[in-house]
Image (tube, rainbow, N blue to C red; front, side, top):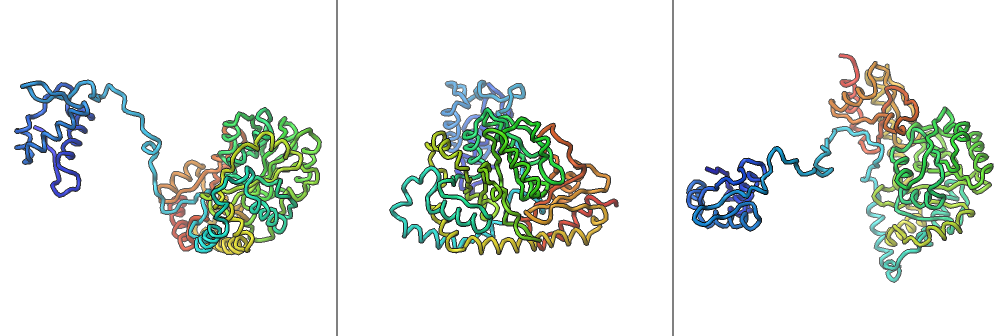
Length: 467
């Protein structure tokens, strides 16, 4: 006899509870194909419910084809919907396959502290734009973005990055990935693109997805090796010269001039400069952009507001050389703007009123304090004797080389067992390319409160120090 626990106090009706229970037994194989179900009277008496409840549940199962009815014989499980061990299970979704583990301390590198977002000011500016620009907000924005935002970006670049640009050179888009897709269409899929190795994990995948070839080029103490760039056959190179991700290398002026010379000497060679976190330098003035030195107009400057405001805003921009403008209008000018006018006008006002500069100054101090708290916690722990720290001068992450005899995989696993998630440097190398420094992990500190670093370091102590 079928036995189910039916909750008379639940919001779900009893007949639906019974229907779901029987259906689950049919799908799991607990009820076999062709097996006879109890009569309505007997099942109602057994479960101490009304026959109408059983009849309603059976009717729903019958309507959906889970059971069949035979005159004067009763109800039977339909054999063709039976899932047995021989039948492969339905494919699970990515959400079901991926078990989401919550770590007390997760040193992610791809987040910022969203609590720092200036919600009050942003809401006030947005309301102001709803009033002042009501006639324009619902109009389609120009493909390159609204003019007032492009003008403000040019002003900001001139004042804070030393870059002279005109609004017609600026293209606003929904983040760096979208802009990279435009860039590849603009420069050509048939080209070879040199990429820093290591670098952004998704970068090579984006280029491959667009049908472009990539040439991984390793780094030395001064950034991308220009001798290997020459040998790569590339006619475009993607760089993070002011603060390499993830190694933190700053490309000095001499090396920059060599790369610029490489671009000038070849026909249609270009440099893609990603200036992704130029606002976050703690011990000196921000490093000038490579675009500032670009007298031959060969640098495509790329930046976003992901680190300085929030990744979810999906607002980025690129500054194109004049030599590519006509080509851009021809190849990409038909695309609609991918950033809503609401956000563009609000961001423009945020820039023009000085709100962005004040916000960046505030969060720079906040992240500097978090970096200092992390470094202090590590220095005060037993870890200090076998740690080598690099990349702390700028950005929102540091690198730890751990000299305790553990390899990278063991460092990550043991840290996870103690509630701390760290990330291996090897994940940032293009598969099969380049030699990764041993036992090195990355700690992003933007998403962790300063007060938590002592406990996080204590957990790493337990994981990495000999008992």
